[in-house]
Length: 257
Ligand SMILES: [Fe+2]
Ligand SMILES: [Fe+2]
Image (cartoon, rainbow, N blue to C red; front, side):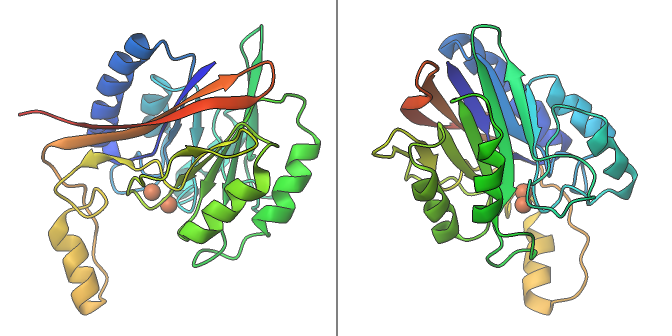
């Protein structure tokens, strides 16, 4: 089974380029399942019904993270859509869920979204929560999106789950890391899959907004940058009989003029 995982997609402008790239790569690489992190898919950050529907046009499952509930009006929708995830380590009672299973007939893939807690919101301990989540999964094919700031926390999660899941993919920093690896017991890993959005920007946001924020520490409205875009993803090849990964490949494409 070949799975394409796209890192954080920024705004409608990022969605447009992600869709174009994913459609092309899907046929070139014969991709079976597409997963995308959509926590920044709406213009002005977060995810809305409109941006959810846009990302759903080209992906099977949408993961999120610290911006899951940025849009109050979309909060209840997390209970409405089976293919929309928020981190599994939110406390009980929060809308939505952190896991979904895609049934492809001959095999299935469980997708789990979890968030780190180092330098982030103090959710439940992701290591304890993931142990509990894994107890109830009935397939060997499992992909984890760990949405976290701290590289060491993500790597620790990858090593902790080596041999127990097919892939541990980091998101949130919007910067693709070059450390993709199949760990010794068969788990594909990368610290961050990267982002899709304008390259000449700070994580997809206009440079002047972010510079002002860091210079003055005053409230600034972030707007998505416009310019030539990048598309960041990974392709994981999973042996669906064993749940082990054969390979993980980084994708980093640039829009041409
Ligand atoms: Fe993000
Ligand atoms: Fe994030």
